[in-house]
Image 1: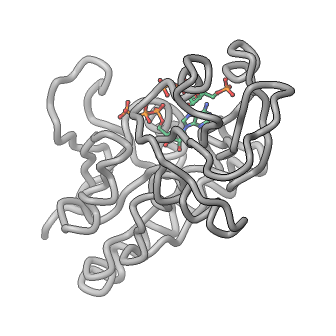
Image 2: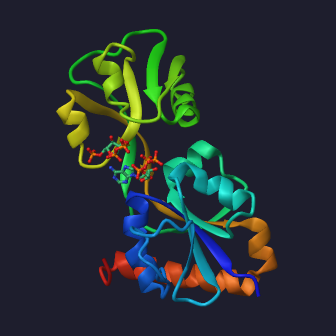
Length: 216
Ligand SMILES: Nc1ncnc2c1ncn2[C@@H]1O[C@H](COP(=O)(O)OP(=O)(O)OP(=O)(O)O)[C@@H](O)[C@H]1O
Ligand SMILES: O=P(O)(O)OC[C@H]1O[C@H](OP(=O)(O)OP(=O)(O)O)[C@H](O)[C@@H]1O
């Protein structure tokens, strides 16, 4: 029987997802921090993990490289993952996607220069407000763009607000509440239905337990 593969976003989501998966009875068979192996077996027979960049998880699940995936809602929104089935909000890696700008500075009228890693989401957000934008796509450290005069505002993730404050920026508008989500390949869901359903149910149960404060 083919093993079910879960694609996990590395970094912050991986760190928070591992205790959740452990509570669901799925633990990596080797230390992920030390191993250079890209496919890792788990203590649960028939379930294996692949660890990839957060932004790559939708592609792995969409194209059948993994049956299931765990990544941020921000990544899914930006990817336009309508083709993926999203059954569980894991409640981990919580933060907010926000518009932020230099503290106390009025945004200029007319076209706004917006720096972001999320051009699709940003365009949609400002279009809904009827604002025209010039988007500058960045891959990190968005907070820098207004400081060097390259952008009027940013669309970026905010958790504690410390990064904004440290750079003289302030939140201006909420774009979306973000948390990590479990996604499932639709074909895999049909084809391996009982096994996929059982796995989704275990993970959903662990997420619900975590929400009740039962696990880390
Ligand atoms: N400060 C934060 N608080 C909570 N969740 C966050 C925070 N920053 C990012 N996330 C969530 O974790 C996901 C991955 O972020 P992370 O910073 O680990 O990787 P990245 O820098 O976006 O990816 P890569 O290293 O592959 O470029 C984000 O897409 C988001 O869903
Ligand atoms: O509100 P805060 O608690 O300060 O968190 C927000 C910061 O966290 C994320 O960056 P991260 O630390 O992941 O760095 P990266 O974007 O360079 O990966 C995000 O891109 C913000 O910069």
